[in-house]
Image (cartoon, rainbow, N blue to C red):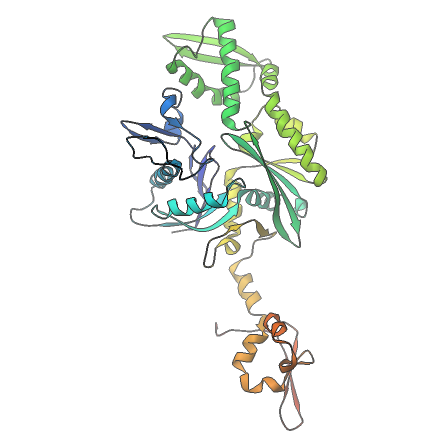
Length: 422
């Protein structure tokens, strides 16, 4: 099957290919006696059953033992993550019994232990992890692919998860993208934003309709589910119109856009302050904001006043990882890549690079009887120190001299090395 990529942002764990996103599943689980519900279905019932709802299992991924959850079937948070991977595979309609090779965009907040747990829980699933990359690098690469004029500039990547926002400084050195630092801002995630908006809208309904949507779990869930669509609607005369049907009555409230921006000011200011701090280390940096964070009212205008700002969504980050698949596919053990070439390398480019290089150690192997009579760029091979010979490579244009024994010297100029491929 075609290589795909998985982005681990618990706001929406996303599986995608070069053609776009296949599955986006929020990091929610609902562990009830009737069964385990995951993703969007679990999120849409999280306020109905708060004691059975779980949404920190990706951020706090661990094997620490949990008290009896779901009849003892959930032993630790890793079991929730494993179950969600299976649910995503099912939603993607992967053929039974087959595995799918995936690159994984990993948040910079993941520890080495969490990476190990991820690799462990993925093994019994249909996902065969063949490469890991810091998701901030993927986002920066996506920016450079979309806007080549930005290449070479450092990038501050802002990624909002469920419970925190990550800010990563990505620099370019010797044509390599590199993560220099990662800062985590707790209590600035999408769930914190939802909690703030729940409180604000509840106050408006009470004030304008004498209706408290949080007076019971059912109407609280209705309010929670309705908030995203309200935020995406266009304000009328500077206000959002909030409509909620409950108990056979349609309740309406007006939310002035200025009040919305004001309610989210603490979250917005914390993020902006950290951006300003990072800009001191990289004054000419570009800002890359995930699509979720870009929708936070007032944030884009705040950030644009500090630096040039672009939006990169998960589909673009996934496409960037797949474009760099040649560099990300791990040979042997799988390790998290925190560096990537500025430009992707294709198979043909890799082959061309191999076909214009010849290591001296390889030359010694194939021409052992002649080593004492070979000079490379004027230096006799047998007189070069062993440690220098091991690292020395002939490249296109280098000259090799072979003493023929009758006083004559044959001179060769390296143009191509076939290594037995053709």
